[in-house]
Image 1 (tube, rainbow, N blue to C red):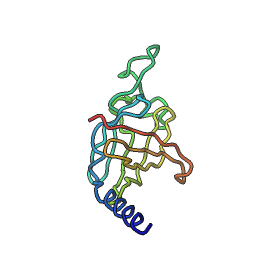
Image 2: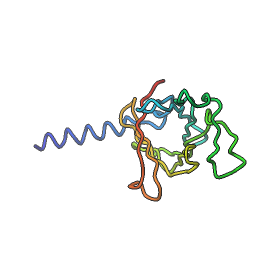
Image 3: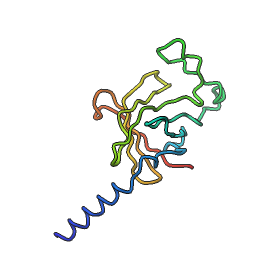
Image 4: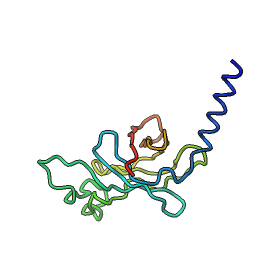
Length: 144
């Protein structure tokens, strides 16, 4: 039993040490395959912009979607494509990028966010209001 505990501890320590801040950089597709984002480093934090999203054939093409739900009237004409939807994420030095914000263009609301790397090719993005308990998680798989 003691050997199993030591092995589990070593594996946990190894997995935490193998995570670097830059591992989230790249292109990611949602598990539902309805949105793709590109995560990049901007100054000392990480951000994500929309690079593709699924459109119903009965709606305008992707390039025509505008941020009409934005609470700031000056921003309601900006396109969804290329929109910054996650910003200010900071790597905690272990396994999370936190203290960021995530913007939902469907509702015009901004939430706090945290990102966790589940594996080198899979991450969990959680948007929440107030405390993390009150939120929603989305899973993304790396596409590039």
